[in-house]
Length: 485
Image 1 (cartoon, one colour):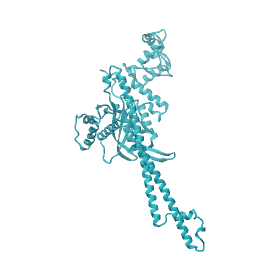
Image 2 (image 1 turned 180 degrees about the vertical axis):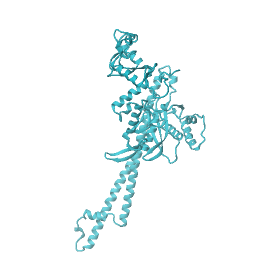
Image 3 (image 1 turned 120 degrees about the vertical axis):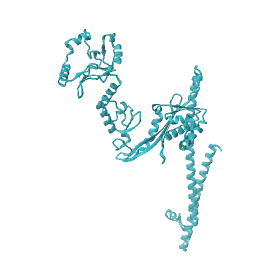
Image 4 (image 1 turned 120 degrees about the horizontal axis):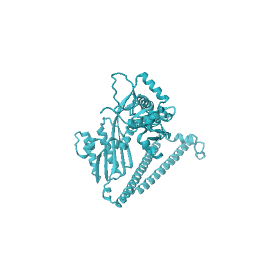
């Protein structure tokens, strides 16, 4: 039977059930009216029953649902009819949902066919058509197992992420799923389950050529047949992977680094976060809460910061203290997680840092990216912008001719004209040697610095020209920027 005929038959049967239910209700009501007339006639024989007016609605309601056998049969028929109607409504809803899912898959398949057709037509018009015909869809898979805190309890949670992409790595479908199991799931089991779910999604989309990107070396060895599984609990899902491969015309696996599986990694991390947050009533309504693993306080998920590269999560307060402490130490800002060296991006810190702290953080990060020998600071006291020698040279070449020979430079921010060698405002009509030999080099700030250096017994490094204070040890100076080779 076709889908349209089946749906029409179900609708017709439903209408018949509703009509029969209404008919049974009318028959019951008429029967109780007659019963009520007979009872009243027996109680008042002097008054003819025909003169009785129709019973009140309250009396009829009192009689409905009595203990008689006929009432019991009517109630049974009504209950059965109601159950059948509920069952048919549930079936109709499931049928509608299934049609919606099938329509969505058809739309995605048509979109994939359209992309493949465009790719084939472009490949046939070029000389590299033979190479392009072997292109495969890319499936990023990642399974994660992590120790997290839910309030004052330490738990182990797992999740997986799958991203099916086209030839140009454009995401077609994303899948994230928590792995909830009473048995402890290992990292390898989570990775295998992610691969199984990724292959299932590709088969449902009717994809035939796949290249799976795997970041786990053990799983890669199992898939390529380099190593055979010895444990039964991983052999079963790997057999399922083999069965799914047989439904494909071309299958390949590529071992990638952790940063190359960013699509799937984020989805798997989101699946883990969904398991460690819980709803809680607040003054502003319901809010999702999460435990910060640094301060162990329950925070709203809107007050949690996620490091962009590793996706470790901490509350704004703890991250602010961490960033400020790193800035005071003058070092690069990395993730607070033990053993994690992921860099904290400046653009993502606007939610918990003041603008002046972000400016200092940006300056520190630029200082770390520019070698010491290439650093140039604008001598304008109101600017002091950090630049590299190469970028300020390229900028000055566009401003005037002969910048490299004259050693004159233009500040990229304030346009201040200065000498890159003397690190002072540009000395017109004087060479660098003449300027350094003249008394013009002695400024008030330089005189105060030299006076302070003599009082504190500071010494100047002959290589980097920085002032050094002797805290302890001998008088030998080893330059930290230019160590002895």
